[in-house]
Length: 272
Image (cartoon, rainbow, N blue to C red):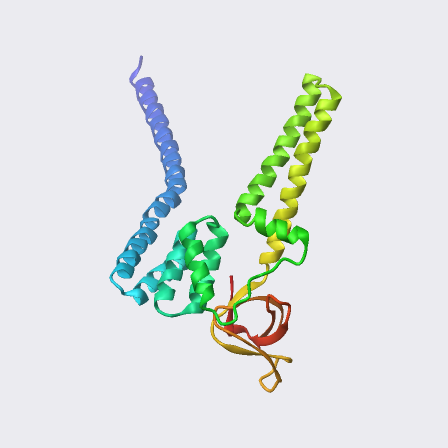
């Protein structure tokens, strides 16, 4: 082999090595870019945990304002769960902010509806609201939803409904491929369909019932018209639960749980 051929082979080898290094560099860059959001998420996820622990110590030491600030900061970062809202409600309650306490208990109730401590604190806070009205179902179906589906969070009902739909689909496929007796197949499908319909109906009703609900932040007069000079229709008290019907400018028309409606300023209520 001549010197020129050896030189050419050496140059080709260097070119191949350079190409391989370039490809590895591109792959490494892609992997790094893909992993960097996960790494950033892992780093930032410690921050809410630190704030949660800090808020817990502040609450135990009676520094309730500091605890509220830490819990609110966690929420501002997009983190939320039932325990967070529950603890925030407790901190507001210790500050005698009944409206904020009830609001956060209600938010926690949507996520952890079966928590015994939450339900006890929520009932006690509501007992302190002037003329508190317990929501009453207007129909038999409404009472069924309150009694039977009240223990489920909305997300849980959605998953249960979806699961029943999947079970129905599996029954149909099994019946087709395993040649089940028609009568058995129909009985199984009817049972699953009834359960699916009940759960789906409960999910829709519960979602509609929760739509627009809010809590009054301070005692306020509800007026017949959306203006300061409007005649006072009735009074709403801090911690009362209302339902927003419509808005007009800086006003919102709300309904009490007994159906009585009036106009209040938007900043006097906060949606659950």
